[in-house]
Structure formats: C-alpha cells, structure tokens
Length: 272
Image (cartoon, rainbow, N blue to C red):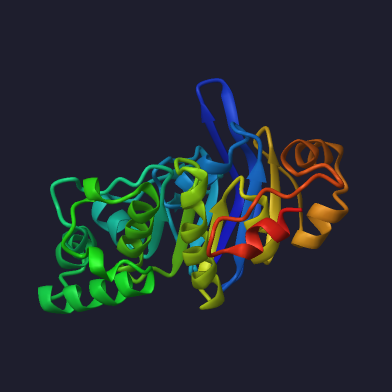
C-alpha cells in the first residue's frame, strides 16, 4: 500500500529524515515510536504531501505522490492532481481540527459532499453509520465545543473515514487528551485495525503498539534505526538507542501497571 524510497527532508540545515526507505503492506498496522523530534510526524506529513521532501520516492497504492526526477529530486504535482491523491489518505492529528461552527454531522459530511461530490443524503447516511461505529451517534447535532477531547478525536476519525481512504495516518492522536479519555480513542483505532484498515500510527502509547501493531519502527534523529515485530522490539531490542528509549517509557520490571482506561483493558496489560 505504501512504498517509500530514500526519502530525505530538511528544514534549513537540520536534516529531519535521512534516506528513509520502507514498505507497508495493505492491511498492515505499522506503529512508529521514538523520542520527540526524531522525524516521525514529518514522515507522515511527507506521505500525504503536507511537507514536501527534497529527494526520494513515495507511492501510495502504486501511485506516485509526487514527480520523481531522474536525479532523485522530488517535486509536487499540481494542486488538482495532488488533491485527488490526498483524498485517498485519511489523517488524524494531535489536535482535532474540527470546524467549530459546524455540527458533528456537518463536520463529517462536508468532505464527501464538497470534494467527492457525494449526494448530501448519501453523505448523511454514511456519517451516521460512522458515528454509530465510534459510539457517538447521539452527538450528531452537537457542536464540537460540547464534546470532550476524546469525543472530538473520535469525530475526527469518523470524518477521515467518511472519505473512504485506502490508508489512515495517525499522528499522536491521544497526546492532547486527558489520560481518562485515551481509552475510547485507542479502542476505535483497534477496531479499525481488526477490520483490515492499513494504518501508520505515530504514538507514545506503548501498550497500543505492543497489542495492535503488526510491525514497530524505532526512529532516532531522522533514521529508521530498528524495526521488527512488537515482541522483538519490546522484549529484545537490538540497538542500544532503542533499549535506552524503552527503558525511559516502559514501567520498570516489577513496577505496578498504571490502570488501563476503560473500556480498553488490554492497553494497561500490554504496556507492562
């Protein structure tokens, strides 16, 4: 579903991604972990062209996301072409980015109606089905200001799914939430994974990574330093940098587990 070849991105003299290459299979859940500033979010933003890399190649479902030059340089497509390609990719951010002046239902239908020209009645039917899916059907006529942070993030997920994407990107979707609100959002993401959605998730929720990921990548200072199954990464990391990172973010052996937010009891169990 995703192929990235020798991707390089800099901000001024600071290199954020150094010749990153990876493949993501259709239906795979890839979780990216690492310290803040290691390039994780920039990678997601390059995949859907919110950031333009200097060099490399990016393909989504076999289609290039930019114009690849023979010398390796990367240039963007015209807006019309780029918007068509972006419509195949859903992205959920740290902040919810809902339209404050629109109801929950209108937040979800606006994309399909305006971008994909979906008939309004069909878009509303889809939106209600998605709200049912994320457990918020009763909030259809509410405004974002009347929702908790966790509810707003689940609406943001429903809004992304309304575009019927082939790929979902999650950039720290729970980092702005109070701890007691994290569980419902992670449960929604786990449900998507079980349904076969291709997902690339940047997160600090190690329990989610261990329980849901098919593969885990560890990023450090713009490099993809280590990859493997969750069992391999969390139980037997090979690289010293990976070991140091996990030592800081995982409970010490014998330490009590933090309570898992309901209803996702698997999170607390898997984090220990």
